[in-house]
Image (cartoon, rainbow, N blue to C red; front, side, top):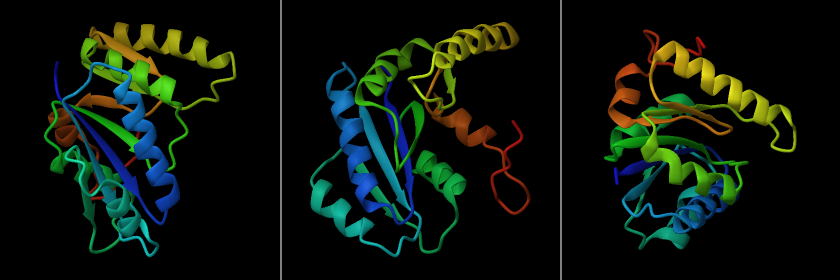
Length: 178
C-alpha cells in the first residue's frame, strides 16, 4: 500500500486542530492504512497550538509538528507540509476540519485506487453533494483520461506532483486560478 502524508495548516486554532488530528487518526484506524504521517504546520500562531500539540501527541511517531517563524498563509503552509512529508500520496486538511470520521475513513480506503482525488466541500445533508460528485467524476475522467475520483473534501494526490505543480505567483503566494 502506498504511503500517505496528510498536511494540516493551522493558525490560532489549537482546539480544532487537536480535534482534527484525533478525527484523522480515528478514521485511519478504521482502515488498512498503516503507512502514514500527519504533518502539522503552525503558521506562527499566538495561541497555545504548539503546547496543546505537544501535550497530546509528543510521543506519536506518525506526527510531525513545525512552527513557522513568521505567518506565511494557509496555502504556503500546506506546500511546506508537502515538502516536509515523505508519503507517496498527499492530502490537504484544514485545522478546523468539517469532514466526518466516516467520510474520511472511506476516503482513506479509496486513496490507493486513484491517481488523484479532487474535491470540494458541500453540506453532506444536501442531495446536491451526490449529484455533484457523480457529474464531476465523469467530467474529470473524460477530460484527463485518468482514473480520478471526486469527493466532498480537500484534494488528495501524489505528493511530488503537488509540490511540482502547486500554483504560485512571483511572490510565492498561492494563486487560485481554478
